[in-house]
Image (cartoon, rainbow, N blue to C red; front, side, top):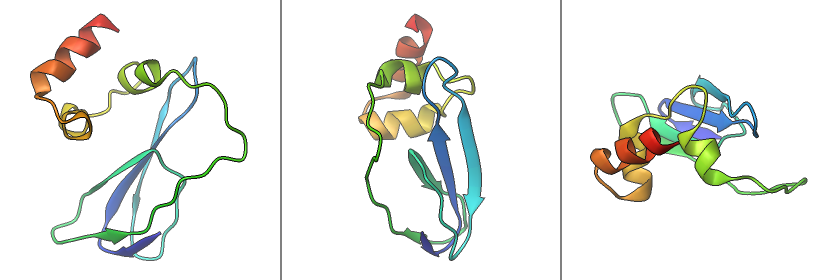
Length: 94
């Protein structure tokens, strides 16, 4: 749930499609997501929780690096704490 600001929330569907579903959330909005980023001009505050009622095997590499709309290099570089060139190399192999 977004407490303050605007946040882009993204959800990656399971294989084989690995589609990214995105929505910009504003104060009070709730969304099931896999990653998010601040898209406003100031600070954003959101509350996030992790849970699954139906856990399944998900090949993370295929979901993240093989989604049908690329997750931004800047987001992946921050998430994995690597340079963008490393992300580019991984995406070329997938």
